[in-house]
Image (cartoon, rainbow, N blue to C red; front, side, top):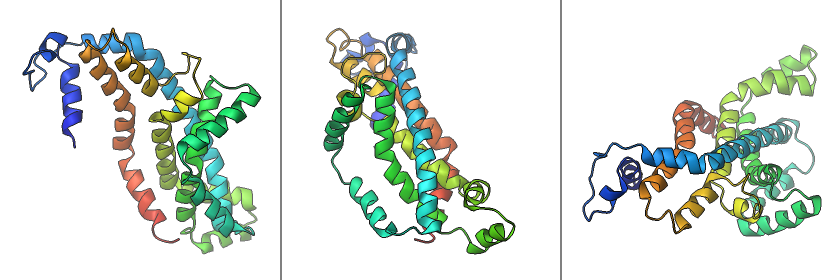
Length: 256
């Protein structure tokens, strides 16, 4: 499973002449950075667009999902079972159906081909998942802590901000990271909602166009370098937040 990743990194450091051989090197003996220079020059704008869109979708997802999960887990509003069912059903809706519906909505508001459209679309996909993850963890928050906060005069909003959110740090990181990954790897919304603008074209679409362009299919070290650069943010975040992800998922599994 890791072999394609190894070959991607290996090929990104070899020259095009080495890659064109019938038996290319199994180690990056070429040691060239020309592929990365070309990738940054030609795909740097797409990488920046992906960072902006993914970061915006992550922030929006956490801002919406955290209070919703708090309400469903601890405030127990009427009809919460139906709301949870809706969240589950939404995740089963095919992405192309959502993309077509969002296209019509965003067109009526005049925000197609913009960062706002991609951020809202990616957050729409991530919020239901984040709510379920956060709610599962918040159900395990001890009632005694909430009762003590109430006795001290803390209202629901203060309890949420000063008690529940700090205790839910691991699950917030987990939900935010998955929201970032959903947005970073999005291709469907990026091609459906961003047809006429090159400014906010994310790296997934940029890489697809890069491979499909006839002038670039012979520059495979640049293509592989672009693929490596597009994989780095997700890989780094997963490595850095691995401990928090494991704790967040395990904490959410304690009680449901």
